[in-house]
Image: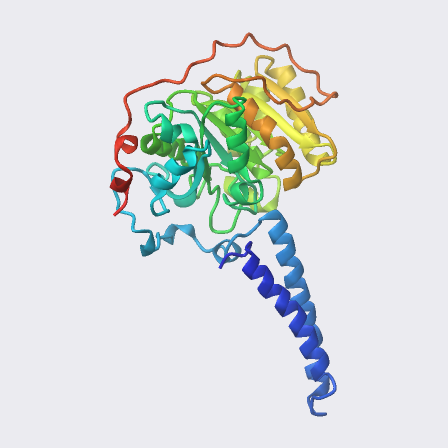
Amino acid sequence: MNLLGWPFLALMSAVAVLVPVAVALMWARWPSRVAWPARALGLVLVMVVGAAFLATLVNRSFGFYSNLDDLLATSALGYRAPPSFQISRGPDRVEVLQNDWYRSGQARAQSGHGIVLPVLMEGRRSALRRHGFVYLPATWFLDPGVSLPLVEMLHGYPGSPGNFPVQLGIEAILDREIAARRMPPSLAVFPNTYQQGRASECVDAVRGERDETYLAVDVPDDVQATFGTAPGRSLGLLGYSEGGFCAVNLGLHHPDRVGAAVSLSGYFSAGTDRGTKALYSKQRGALQRNSPLWWVQHRGPTGPALLLVSGRDDRDALGQDRSLARTAARFAPKLPIIAAVVPRGAHNFATFDRAMPACLDFLGEHLPGPLAPLLRLPQDPLVRAPEPPTPEPRRQLSSPSPSPSRSVTPTSSLA
């Protein structure tokens, strides 16, 4: 059941109306021996239904839980594609869960539009198997000989990969920025950052799941093997809330493959709440290693390029951004870092939506491919900008021989 769809909202609206009406109609009709217990139960039921309806509205606005599996913390390890998809297993490591997707993508590409596809990604190193989404730009269908860069987008907690196409309309934003040449033609992948109902902070837990391995190694490698993305430092990371922490932390740990990372309303110290402390089993080294503030202060990194974005009214995130930017200015002066502010913005999807085009342009600036003049966010006036490093010559998109997954006919990936 889709908890974010109109049918569920209509159902909850009907229940929220019918239950109070039924309680009112029955108020004076109960037999005297059960009247008071029945009326008390009716009042409790009215309050429960009202709370459930309010929770539905909040969940719909913020996209916390998209289905009952997310709400009840059902493990995603048991997920299987429904037989109606008619997908045959092959050598590819990303399984597309949409019938006739190649033909649909080709049709959209003719008008310059990309396509977002539901996928199942199985990490061989991490032993994690989760669903998500992949965005294929028009160029992927029109010019199969070009290896394109990859942008990995990480949702917050609670949340799901579906927040990007549903709450943020990411497909239209990517289409627009690519068409305007402010961002090179790029693939995007939207993986699930956690399962079993608890935050993962995208780390390899001391005693638990290997989420960093899955997100920083398995997912990019599997997308590259399946869709032929560019090798090397052709990966950009972007995340909001906990996903912002993930993007910066993973980027600092993997500068050999990550060209740039963007944090939207993120934070930079690991295990600061009860739900995430268990990931590190009270091991101080694990907490330090996964705290970008500690990493920047003690490791003096020189990459990747970082963009930290917060709304003017999001005081906590704004303070986190300023702290990391000032720490970098003191202890890692060669680390390219920008702290930007969204005027009249708070910790919500409206702010993320307003900032998204400029964030994608920032990633595109550090990924291979030609660009037009970029959209930029105003920098935080309280953070002194470091001297800009000498830019490296931009790499052009490579044109290797077509990969097997892109040279086949559309029907070859379907049963």
